[in-house]
Length: 439
Ligand code: UDX
Image (cartoon, rainbow, N blue to C red; front, top):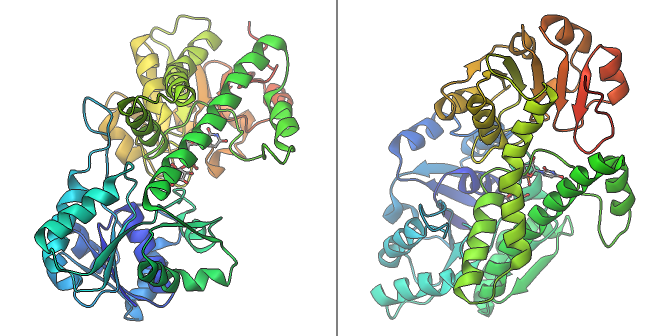
């Protein structure tokens, strides 16, 4: 089938490349000419493991191409995916749908009869109705269907998630449109990935509900971690102990500095705005958003407390700045609030990140970027591990300690065992474990 992807950002590009890999003929469209010409030269706009190879294979096979021309690209397509950005609107936290609606207006004049328009962008409930209205207004007699098909891709694991999804959600009551979606995803049935058909509104809500639930799990275990520290319990044991209950499940129960990234902060906020607008507040989600916001700065204070409370003039080395490993994405990364807290307290911050330093330097101009973990630690009074990159999992702790002026290691991802850090001479502080031997 011929498929067009409107928007060649993270979601559009990964989805487009994977659909091409299934054997479909895909054109990824974007307004940004620079991005399209770089893609044509196989230069990826984002860091995602395996993406450049996947793009190259499918471009070479003639199944994947890139274009800035919507009109031309959508001709003859069985399905057109809208995968443009839906950032938080400045001021009120609602999702900004202007890119989605602009795409719908452009499509209204361009599509062939019998086309399925699929919203892949994360959009509030009712957006599909509005997209349909926009297209119908311009082309009242055109036969088309608007379907919701949310993505559940984790950055850093997006290709695997696309090809082996837990489920595919398709929101549409139109039978012929469901058939088109079945044909698009047929290769995945071989992997026995369930295809769940719902109404369009349910599908739109599923995406927000899934992300809000996952954010709740993380926030829950983070609060348990705080409690563990007070009670002398170990959050990793608590996590294992509850996660073995099938009704709870073991995933998304790792305590840390709070969730960040391009989805959870934005989607939780958008969901609670929608809920408030409909006079049905989702109080659990409100509490999650608030607790997570407070947590990021609290992690900065945790580092300051580990240093005795006064860090004026002290050097602190941070390891990992991106919101999670295997990405260069700094959006809503907990490191931003942590750095701010440390700088406000008068500390001097050096940092290292395997992929994120270029992005981080734009957001955090007062941080000195180091070329290795050890040089970030050089003469530092404390080192704080913020993002659990593999490169930080097997650090030579003795070497790290020897480079430093002080002996505090704050491990916000619990990747070291307290005994091994202490054996290397560290005053080791982690999250929700009874390991704090200060002083
Ligand atoms: C998420 C969803 O997983 C995905 O389904 C959705 O489509 C987009 O949002 P992503 O933002 O790429 O994906 O990252 P994810 O791996 O889910 O992590 C989100 C944040 O939660 C990170 O900051 C991570 O460090 C944090 N996290 C995750 C924890 O702190 N503890 C955990 O147990 C899991």
